[in-house]
Length: 268
Image (cartoon, rainbow, N blue to C red; front, side, top):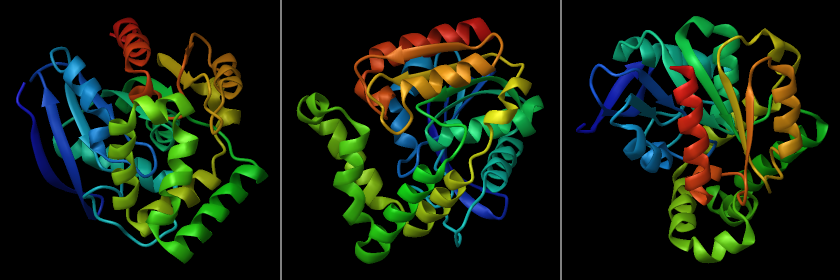
């Protein structure tokens, strides 16, 4: 189960990727939230590596993956994922993504459904609205004025509950560093993609096993939004991780992992 980190050229840029897990096992792709990198999934990769072959990658403009000029689109982000899967030799995979990564997973399932075995949508949205669009405009204005450092603390405050900000300080500090190291181009590009979210009307088309998983105190992608998506996808499951906010796999890994393992067991 030795892990390998590697640079992979796909869809015109170079991605930083990591491959872990058991050779010959079903593939599992972990995608990231905005302003994080592939180390977001260290705990889950360690947990599941004896049962899956795991691909993690830094999203375009994030971590050590090359940045291109914004804006980005979900067509571009899914083309990145498909090209990476092709480069690694992945025919079909289970997909797990939070926030941006979950929305990318929905786009993958709708437009490249033949490449997915299952989908876990974590702390994610399927549509944008005027308030959501304005929030991203405001954040982009902040980084234009003060760089990525200017959004670190406001982002951390949204992403974790107040008790976890105290007891989970080492985790929060690690995420602070991920945000700080995200390129302005990558943040802006992916933010522009999020502003265009319009998948809700197509959720009923999904036929693969789907899990909606969300933190009980996630204000960005609240539980009621997850329940609404769940109601539109026949046969899907919905789990509320309590307590947790937006980065539920780090704040409450025990509940997150239990729900994910149950989902993957059903989907196999």
